Image (tube, rainbow, N blue to C red; front, top):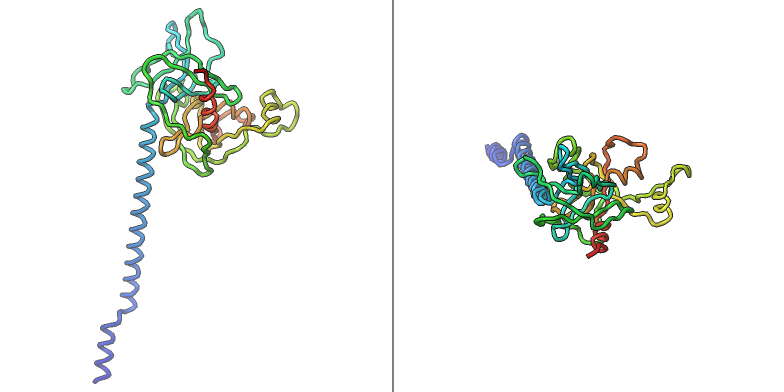
Length: 282
């Protein structure tokens, strides 16, 4: 009887195998729920950061084109730009600028601001301040009220491979209108702009200059930049601009055989724009 009593009391104190497994599973589920909660929180923070960055950048983004009041539409879209400095300077790609203007029709260089209500864009006259043909960058001065200027990454700063970035501009703006759109990408590589040619026939003057000197670097992205995105600001989740999207200059150097969007985008590092701002006429 004593032994039986001891065995029964011991059984009451010792959990069964099923109870132990249940308790273990409960701990695992609780840990999984906590992990999912942390992940959701971090994802929510990242999403909120992107939303804030886009809202910060969009008021600074403009369309670049020409204005001719005798044609319809009067504004002819050519690319994207963004406000820098005192808000009256616009950064863009040099190839976005028109090679000539029809003076007989009083055609002028202009920037257009998207309407907040989705209506017609507001155009402002612009003048060329400085151009860097080697890096395909240009600065314009606009008339009228200053725009909110973007924050540029400090001189000497560099992007990192794997870094998430955004770019806002007007993809295919001549077709779908002056409506800013934002795309997300990752920095795939930071690579030299010049690449070796197989034959002398493939060399042009620009390629020879780049190969004979230390070639500048460009930012390669895993996101597609479309015609119209040239001149768009490339920025991080804080809204800091780290580069300028470029479709023609870079693709002409690195992807001669590709005539359609390839899923790869390129941007000029912000240091080149910092240098142009420092050298511009005052």
